Image (cartoon, rainbow, N blue to C red; front, top):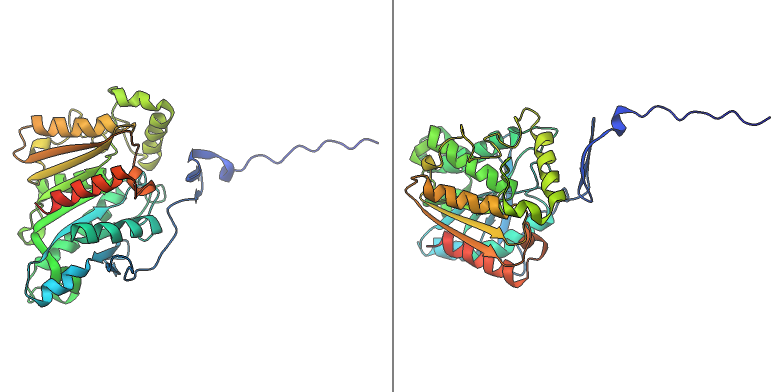
Length: 335
């Protein structure tokens, strides 16, 4: 007798794919599989650059890796000048990446040595397990922690201060930065600082916006560089921020009617870096153009990497364009 065919079991909700961007991430209805960006490397002193790193716990949800260039210790011993401080938010579409992964660790060992800056590389909670705006809340907490080092020893924050930040940071040169989604975060931190102020009278001197992740229903020419990637970024946003109204949500489109005016951006200087081959290129250019036209009283600059795509500097850190971009950012932080 022939065997009776057996129907396959019904698909489980766990097998329903909500979003994927391979080979990096696959998001199912009830679980997430990350294949990139979650690797861990320990803090250390880098043999090639002499940059020292160490990890700090800011709260149960937030931590950071600090990078201190070798010249800092010598300068402090001689009573010399303190360093610019860069509070940095990594990219990864709000769902990938870590301040502790090898890519960012290698990047900041190199960059901190080049720019001679103290870096606070922030570890925030990732979506979709912690949907946006959790990343904004965590990133603000990290910024508030950094500027808490302006408190006097008699303040309650005094006994919680980190010796590297307290000993080496020049808070008159406080910068925020990030790439991709991290640029989006940096922008929103500066806008929140405009609305609420920062503790202890802290002021943000400038923003470093590297390949910023902004969207909008208005079409821009760079959308056509890779329509598939452009649609993937749109669907990514909807998954990372389930409560969003879409691409014209002010969180992802700072130019839309109803978004806070860029004129109030709480810093005096902005550098926007874009890649000529990046599908988000013209969103970055629009940020620069809209900021300059907004009535904002600061100084803005833009730099474009010829022929290069999104976050190319992390994928090809030794290419000529990555070296030049790092130099442009270094000069911005030290001027």
